[in-house]
Length: 496
Image (cartoon, rainbow, N blue to C red; front, side, top):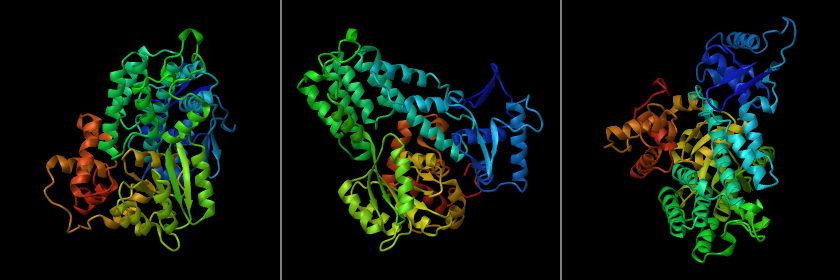
């Protein structure tokens, strides 16, 4: 039996021994199949994603050699003509065959997304899930876009598990021990309203009403500074309940193993819990003239916790009207649509006050309009043929303030606009501003920039926000365009 570990340094283990999986690129083949979750990955995709932009002439035979050596490492006792049972051929590519419990990232996701009957069961499952982590997911493959996307998705699930564990502990009356962890969690992720809700509730139940209100004030300041928003309905209700010392906020009896006197914590009934979950979910609008594409996107969104489909548009005019009426967080916009195309609609949407994030979707990576879309302020673009996990990562990256540039599109697009200097581009950037823009243009997230510069992640976020305001830009992706137009980076620069 072979077990795989991706929640930290990538490893395969058999009989307690770590297997020799060869060099990093050979390991990346196995890691990419693991990320696919058992689905087949075409050889052409493996080549494009292992050598983004410029695969070698012998890429196909190299992949085949990697697979052959990996099979020998994973199944050393397999007879020469016997079919592989772990890394299997699945035309037109390969797939990883393993049980959920044999892959730590698969098991982690299963535990987090499973329905739990009681707070005690939830607490146990979340602690089991979080104990699987040994470091950043897929460590060692950060330079590959698909690994970055998967690491981001898994980290988002990890944050969700931290909050579900805390919520279950509070429902069981275990308040005091959770406060330090919740304080650190909310401070590290100040835009997560659920983190602030749990911290404020824990502080209130510990007899620290002033500190609980102070936590909500900090949440309000963070949301206003970063997003220009006030507290959401759930936190506003909690603030009012704390001020009047509402009875349903009182801690349950720990000896009872659950809420006392029929009272729950911040949400006294199942309908209220569902409403709170809807309020915390990211609101997504789909705009595409093809019904089949809209149906596929709905299936993806419905299967992902924390995403709520709030509307569908068949053309740009409908998209503009729906944005005004339903106020989504993210718009998935087809770039070519009848009546009013996606580019024109995106410009109109982004010109409004407090606009949503807009992610452009395209079928091909050579669309000339993508360059204009980035300059207009969209958060990035994805191919319609992208894997579901890449689409989900794009949505979450956009909301988090990171640009999402699909590697299958980036090479052609950058080649098209690199060196087009914008005569109206502002001057007077400091050396530190230029360094920051270069890192953003190379696809670094705020966390990666913070690690590179050895500064706090929040400081990086503040500096990026200040740059956008100072340059009169809407979104982070426009900094990428600016960097290429001004010649700060080029397609041949290291790391781009």
